[in-house]
Image 1 (spheres, rainbow, N blue to C red):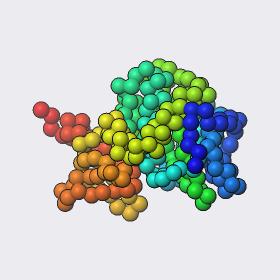
Image 2 (spheres, one colour; image 1 turned 30 degrees about the vertical axis):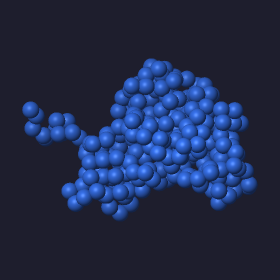
Image 3 (cartoon, rainbow, N blue to C red; image 1 turned 60 degrees about the horizontal axis):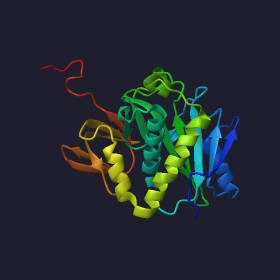
Length: 256
């Protein structure tokens, strides 16, 4: 199985519905990659659980299509680490960045990037990357409690072109992918946790038909979220995570 490298082919699409949708169409037709698909414009982009993803002009939308050797879901951690490195290289401000389980990158506490993994019947994996380079979406369009959006231009005062950003992301992904194939998930998990936001904080993990409230304890050896609740530890392979205000941040909380 061919692994993505820094020299993996890159295609630039003037317009498409979504880069993930285009990658999956190619996979259905037999393509296995590896290939990067970068779109200058998307007309039907989407995020997790089919949510719409807003793409302003100058923002970044690309998908990496390839056939993974194992554990496709754990590639979300590989992708997050690559995005962290690319954003840090673009801005020079690694200390402003943080990773939010399961698939977001934060800049000064605001969401600057997201990741969407989708598999195809031929065993390939499409990893979609969306980054607010030039402009963040309107917060009014987000669901209640969602992390506020930000952009690299606003939060770090830099704005590479999408092509320039892909030039940073592709080798960063290749590097973390090589580590994952060589050493397994354990060092990827350790690196992710070292960059994670909100470990030890109070969260609500929302599932399709329920929610779990507790403290973000860790990510386990498979990549699942571990939440410490009043009833004990709960392990969640998938969920939407929302941070709860700290006591001194709540408007109705007493302050010291």
